[in-house]
Image (tube, rainbow, N blue to C red):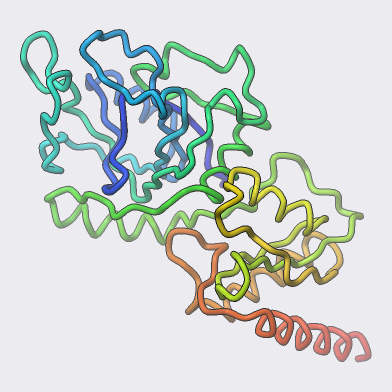
Length: 298
């Protein structure tokens, strides 16, 4: 089942550590748990108006997507993660830590070159919700696809801050295996009569870092990867664009390549492979083509 996409407003983020999603009350966390399922994605948007005059949010991140989580339904107190007061505004009016309730995430990404939430394709004036201030709010359609693309193109995986409970630590590893993060989730029904391609794109020349997937238009898909990348950064470049057939056939070929190159596949992004060459992909596609022709001849 494809993950649903949510957003919440945050007062900042830690670009070095994968923290859990935190809440001011147990009721707000319960609302988030009831609204979502394990494996869903949540982005954190830096607040432009936190409603507290003491809060200092850097101007260069206000309104921007700064963090993303793939969530579990494991909850704990923030003290279990060693998280506590770091700024004066972390204390509420009663002098208590403002965010004592946590929902664990088994993947966390820092969003590099963070775009403004309002600039993402699919965002409208109706997207903003008061609910996202205290809990999480679901988004759908074009905006959900834009968020998934953004995590893939600009998301920097962070090392997760683990809870102290060893049983929960083991559970986190199992969840990451159960819910791989893959970009290929359809927001529209694929055309069964269309010709699909297997594409392989390399992150800059000679990096040996590849994305492998299927699409009707490999060139357009690679342009989407570069949508949120700065010009000075390495760009994704199309290396292989092999016609396959139906979408079902393309999916099967992609799965086969994923199995063949399993040792090169990154844990945080199942579509990225490190240590490959263009010739590796072409060689295995050629072998598959020969097998298919042989089978058709009986």
